[in-house]
Length: 315
Image (tube, rainbow, N blue to C red):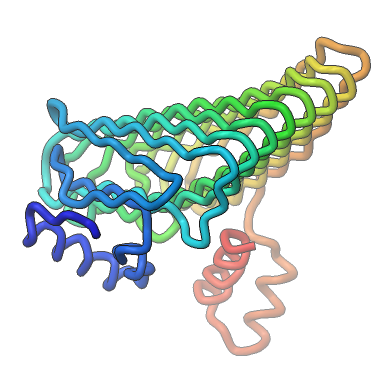
């Protein structure tokens, strides 16, 4: 059962989940979980095959998570990082090691609903064991004043699979620096998807790097960014073909509205003549034909634009 040390903060995070329509069952005692508020661990639960050890450090928390060989969990591992004050700094570090032949999903939520002048720094290092499958779903709830720095390194062993999803679409990005690097061994597979919505004067930097080092490794990077008003978005997706018969694809789609400044850079580099990399990229305004069709059905221009954008971010 989750050990609750600070009941008020625990309940406040639970209330924030309910307001955002997030899954509150993730707080149940069947779920492997660590729940963080500021620099305090307010909940911790382990289940057979999963060992989470957390340590409170200056301005944050460091956690080591180990999944044994041959584990397939019926429920996701819940990583909840919250900050309930309006100002401050928080650093969290997650070190994840998944054994061989395991299949697990992580659901990570970063909840900063009242932030006005707050910096969150997240460092993650993930090792996916041979023939294991890991899904890491990272969703964010931000106040108006969040500066976020997130760096993730993933090492996928032979025959492993990693699926990483980053979503910040319902709230302001404000200042976001997101960097993910994935290294793939023989026959390993990776899929990275990032979806960000930037408004007002938000500043977003996304860099995703795919190292196709192993033979027959495969990877796909897909980023979608919606930029409104005076927001600035810079997306760099890099793929390196190193292993024999490695295959990689980069896909970038950005939509601009207002005076937003958007740049996307697909960088492909092949170091092996048996490797193959491809890319597609687009930057532009909202599809005019779709806009007209929806307005003909009675929607205002703003309503039609919002519906199109919602479809882009949810597909």
